[in-house]
Length: 129
Image (cartoon, rainbow, N blue to C red; front, side, top):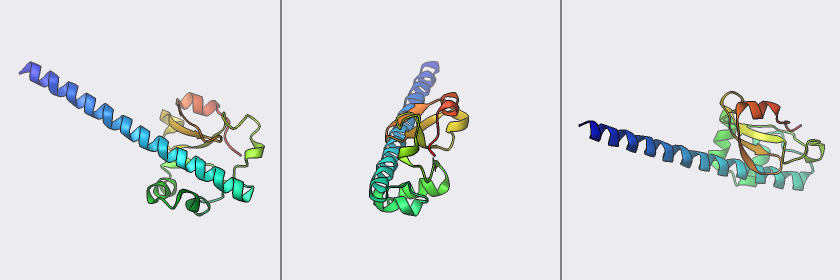
């Protein structure tokens, strides 16, 4: 009986871990799409988008991404100008999962890359202006 309980616990941990990894992968992909949309908008307009509606055409109005931005599950720093990022675009935060400031998580950098940061790393990272 004890062996069955241990096997069940191990399987539950494995399934939970796999589910969390799949969610991280999906969220990283969503952040990359937001980054690409930002760069396409910036290239077309020579300024950063100021609202979700500015970005929507550049990620083909994906309802999931719009929902993440509108709900605040992903925090986007609107109005950011690529040319004003003095710390470098690969070091400057453009968007992040809402729990990042307290718990860490995935962060979109101004160069379009996605990084996993601790809350402490996030606090020290420059934010897009």
